[in-house]
Image (cartoon, rainbow, N blue to C red; front, top):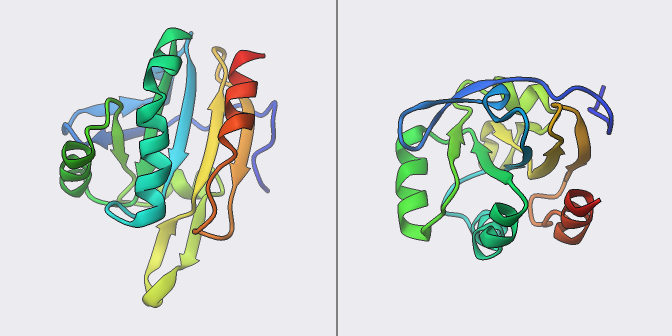
Length: 154
């Protein structure tokens, strides 16, 4: 069953591109924007995260934490973050558990690749409840950034 607005967001602990463990519960008291993306260094994924990068001061100004999650290794994500100058953590869901828990998971993706994160966006409120949920079936589509920002400002 897909996660819905009002549900408690599944907690997680994942390793970041800096090789430190990051948990959702560690951000309690802050709004959190989670962006799942299929693969580092691909066009639409780069566009998705660069949109967040380019608007980072807005999120910082409202005490909101941006997180990117994919099934890439922490090492690939580290290089991706460095090349694109992302100011927010990129987390490795290499074991594919968090993507599955959030319903943001392709059993089979392009080129026969199995177990890849779907493009998705979630806003988690200060109490750990889902305030916005969007899981995209088409990996070429981008999340609705306006709806995300509207949720954050509500």
